[in-house]
Length: 524
Image 1 (cartoon, rainbow, N blue to C red):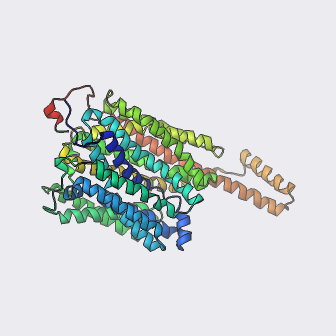
Image 2: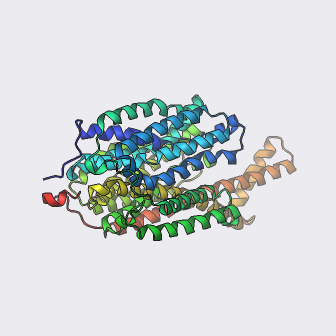
Image 3: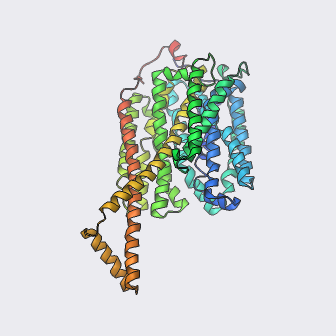
């Protein structure tokens, strides 16, 4: 006999779709501005470097609220807190679109990030309570679509809107969606008894402050590190020290508290702790790959923002098609085997991307991206199933907050590590190619001779033709070094997912065919 779902007059599938609408809107905004920064900078009279704070401010605010959302939902009540987040996010989105200066836009992006931080974990907590355990696999497919497809479609949609309308509509489009979600959540969602408002019985000011300071500083380090040349910058070093000290102190402090703002003791459950680790690396590769591929095709192949986004879009549709299959399989196949299969598929997808060349075309990139993401549906659903199988319902909001933080933190670290990795390896590859590009090489002499004679045939004198041949070969060297650097980054991701595929086989075993006693199921 299954544990009763949260009482509601509406079908739980309808509830899941409604709460996912709001979360989809928020996750979309984490990547939708990435391809529009140059337009925003030009319109508001700012430099390209200054405009990146439009992304950083959102991620910082989002990262602070995300792990605290479980505690905040207990203070306000889950439904009330969710609606407060939707309303504030919608209002902040409108204000972002109306901004007439960069400082104004950054301020409202901060508010948008604070408001949006609670939407992802509360969405998942509501879905967990709306469905009995045996139906959660398919339900997690909905949250999977939200968390995987939204960041993939973000750059595509952002590029299309920016190229065909104006960047303000990136934010304005949230307004009708947010208003609809606010009304539907108010009408359809009901709080179970354990999710009712408890009020400010006690506030862990020290834990709250340490977490907020540590995560804010960490997000600044991750987002600005590559731009500032990491620890060669005093700015980055100071923020890294602040982050490290604050987060270490926060962990020590919260483990000693009876009612901490983040219940880290949940990580002691092997099924939850290992699932959070798997979700961290899933976020690392999902967000990292979704960031690297558009940069690759724009910087090395000359794609515009819209076409770069269209490289990602078919992969998003493939995820939508396969997510229901993964949701059904989780009811028949133990989660750890599905996770191993998903990680193996991702490994093959990342490994296949290593074989790009200067001749790789749009169709090949689309196939590569589909291959990369086909494993993700077989990760998100079983990882979520394993994560929450031993979490009591009254802890679902806290667990969802930690789980969402693991994914987003993995994404932020993945983007920072991989972009830095590409930059460093481009220098390494360039040095290697230069060292081996010798005038005595037959390949070098043939290429040089062909370019030289072509330039002479077009009327250039010998000096100009010599310069053209040398410059053309050097540009080709830089192009190939750049492509090889991206190949190295995808190989790194393949190594990570391959390692995770092996670790997955040792994760806790769940028997999807077992019928649990009613007393045991009531805990879930």
